[in-house]
Amino acid sequence: MPDVSIATNQRLVGLTLDETSLGRGTPDQEHERAVAIYDLIERNSFVVPEHDGGPYLAHLAMVERRLVFEIKAADGAPVVTHHLSLSPFRRIIKDYEMVCDSYYAAIRTSTPAQIEAIDMGRRGLHDEAAGILAERLANKVEVDFDTARRLFTLIYALHWKG
Image (cartoon, rainbow, N blue to C red; front, side, top):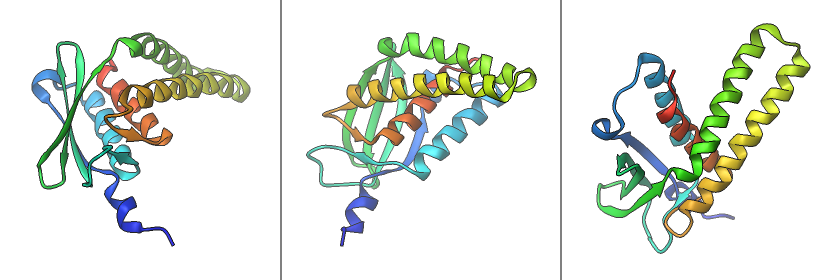
């Protein structure tokens, strides 16, 4: 029988955004960020290698064009800080935004087959970004594929123009 206590500890239980460096968005942007955070916290697998603890809290900020993941234990004790370059994501974010715009436009005027084709492209870009994100976080934070997808959703929501 699996040890459920380990599984429940290997996760994020809270995530905050640094308003000073990330700024506040429009009401639509804030809503998208809140939904992305909720989805991430609701279901995730998050492990800090060589750390006994968990569950974890994360605080995201921007410092010198890098996304900073400040990870703490649930009691607030610092665990690790990871600076993530967003350069590898710039093209994907741009392409993803373009495909999302096409998808939302297609919903109003296109056939189900056309909508499905655009959605497959959107999911493919999302999966590509999740793979890159999991790879870039490796050795600092281990996440499963679904958690990497949810983290990319949040990163996209932070860039989304609304």
